[in-house]
Image 1 (cartoon, helix red, strand yellow):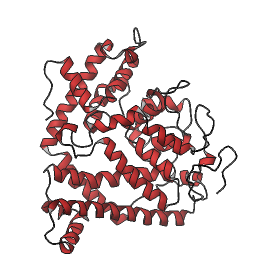
Image 2 (image 1 turned 90 degrees about the horizontal axis):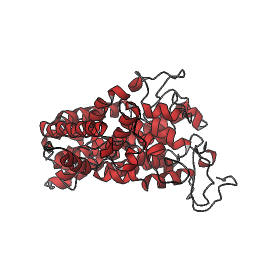
Image 3 (image 1 turned 90 degrees about the vertical axis):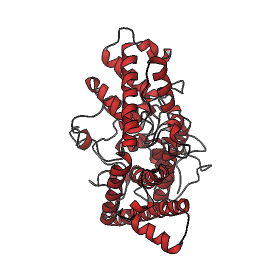
Image 4 (image 1 turned 180 degrees about the vertical axis):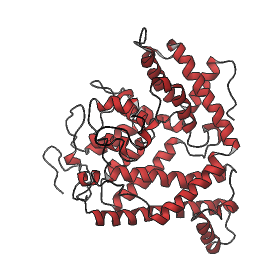
Length: 409
């Protein structure tokens, strides 16, 4: 492949890309114009900016399912994102699309998550209802376009158009062609997405490219497999229970027959790695069939395909839904988890209300220019501040500001 003149052929580690891939030399560019790098493609630079961001570092102390202090070996948002990245790259490589873009999207997909996982998101969305609500996907976009303040010339990371498009649309279109929200956003787009749309058109009515679709399904693959691992480690589920779970039960039988007498720890790892392999192989096979059938000749053909191309087969989708139901019933809705999450929600609500009433409790850079500002502006600033907290910092702040902090042990 030949790069154009502004992208010399040094340092890229260029791979063969299919016609339907995102080609870095054809990138639509960045909101703020920058000179091209002589050693990295636009998507490699995006990945690097994401890894060096404050929001990415904070993921190391944000909940996946279990709080940071409940055990050193449970997944955090950071380790989850790294696992998603590995799966996304594998899928992207098999489909001959841009691995660096897929990796950037995988690493950035959870940057907008609050402390305490989805419990924190529910809490912030509730208290923010009078001011437009809170959505972690929109907050991820806000993090990389506004909240990161690392550069002299602009706010945000100034990521390429394709990375921003994939970040906001990895789960599919957000609107119809008339701009009306659809699906999850049928009641309207979140504030952060609407605000950014005033500066750059991300074609919210279309599907994202193959790279974003790969990152999205890699997220499903990673958390389905690894939440089983963490659930077993926490004692919320047992190997015996897994025998009735779609596909997982068959994998357990395979391991039992091949390695009789294997320790439980090794059995768990054998199941998890087999599960990931089966799902990844199914996605690749199904996606290749979809690509052969649709025969897209460009990334725009992918965007206009009116369907998700990177997906599970019908049989695998059924099995994955069964795994999700099992995890929902036996891990996420276990009373031991739910009790902690209810208390975590209260911590986030308390922090929001207190800082909304007294913005000067925030560090100076967060309270700057809020004197006399409209309530909606203050609320959004406080939501940004609280959403960016780690689990640990949120707990410590609550203990500092309140006489009694709910038990999160």
